[in-house]
Amino acid sequence: MSKAPHALAALLCAALALPAAARAESPFAGLWRGTWTDSARGQSGTASLGIGPDGNVLAGVLRNDAAGSRGPLSGGVSDDGKTALTWSCDGGKTSVGIRGQLHAGGGKLTGEADFLGAGGEKVGHGTLSLSHVSLPVPDAPAKAGK
Image (cartoon, rainbow, N blue to C red):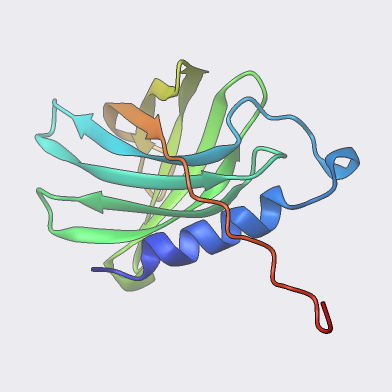
C-alpha cells in the first residue's frame, strides 16, 4: 500500500487543526477520494484531494489508469467551485492543467473540467466524482506527570 494516503491525511489533519478564527470556511475543505473520466479520449483513473479550509489543495494525487501514470495535484478551489489544478506526471516532465466547476453536497464532490496542455490548449474534458473521507481523530498525547 502506498504511503501517499497517510501523508495526505497527516497534512490535512494538521491544516484542520488551525484555530477556528484562522479558517476561511471553504465548502470544499476535507479529504476527498474517487474517480475521474475523460470518455472522449478513453482516459480514466482515481484522484485523492486534501483541500484545506482556505480552498487550497494541501496534497493530492491523480492516477491515469489508461496511461499507467500518476502524479501530484496542486492548486485550489474557490468558494464558488471554480477549480484551477495542475497535475504533474511522468516524473514532472508533463503538466496538465485542470480547469472546471465543482459542486459539494451530501458528502460528494462532483463536477466537470477541461484538461489543458502545456500551451493552455484544451486536450480533453472530463467528469469527477469524489466522496468525502472521514478520518479517525487521534487522542491527544497524555501530558507528562499526569
